[in-house]
Image 1 (tube, rainbow, N blue to C red):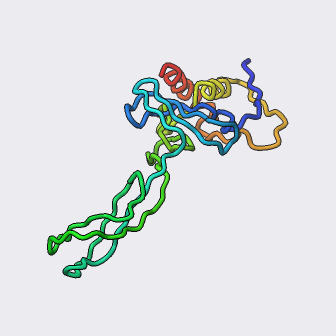
Image 2 (spheres, rainbow, N blue to C red):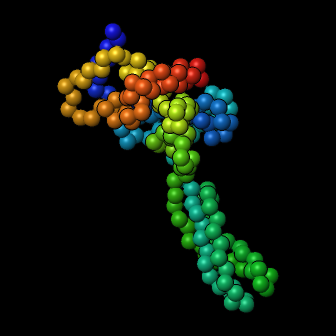
Image 3 (cartoon, helix red, strand yellow):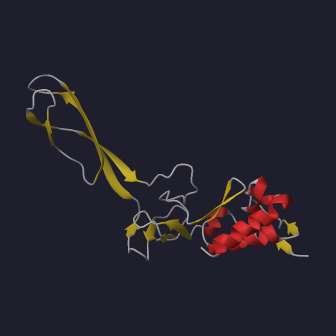
Length: 196
């Protein structure tokens, strides 16, 4: 009989190194903490295309809503993901063709990648590398240590709690992973991820 005793690990226990899909080459990259602490800055490095980034990238959205100083036609412009704030921008009026300089509004943002509907890592919101579809659900892990811990839990015949003081990762797992009837399918998904 295979036993699993909860080590009282939380999901954040596996966040030091998270395997993700590189935003440049779509191969495996890693997001890691650059300093200790839960809310610390993270970095991303891709060994394939050599892409790297330290912390979230600051960017701006430049907005301009005004009227042409020549013909009074409405001008509305929105420029996303600009690297630095703009004091003035030159705009050609669509109605009269006159080019004038205007002072836009600069909105400071942090560039976060958005992949709606896919499991992502918490800092950059990049899609996770270790994701597999199992019975219409997404089986995912942050890294191979996380995957190994899931495997130990899923494959166990006896699952024991360990006098916890907070909710552990395995207690928060969805019912479809915990269910004995899905054990074989989940184990197959884990084995596929181990080879990825």
